[in-house]
Image (cartoon, rainbow, N blue to C red):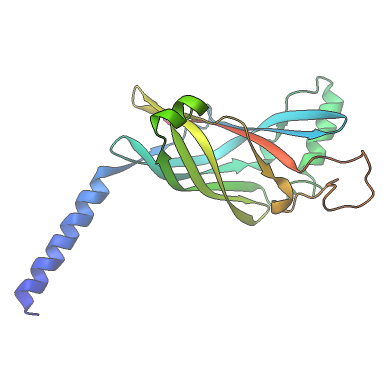
Length: 204
């Protein structure tokens, strides 16, 4: 291959990369408006709350989210169903302990978006979702692939993404406390493995 052809191919490649990068943009997540809601159940009741984000960014191409990531501040775990201040603090402290999320050792959890697929009209009408989101969720140093439906809208230059409630099996991330599938002989003194999650995400 002569030098002139090589230089032409190199220039074309660099131009293509430049055009692609210029078409893609990043949008910061509004930390004051974004959170991950959670709820967990046992045979005797249910607790719920939310976790705040410490940072996040969405990758955007031609008005569509194509990737991104956000980090959960596990020290911000909050309970919203217990009115008594002392009981509320006791539960939150337990959730932060190594029985559950061990936030001293693992202060952050993270979700990295690997694929976003636009839903067809029939799917969107049935689930009220506009997109299917897939990615890698890391909790307590363990990374697993998950997927969920989301309603993603662009309004006044800002993205708003909300998910219907979906579940993950907490034991896959080593959150094993009072799990009937892990610990034998618990009878009715157990906590269900399914952790229910919903996500509220707003960009700046």
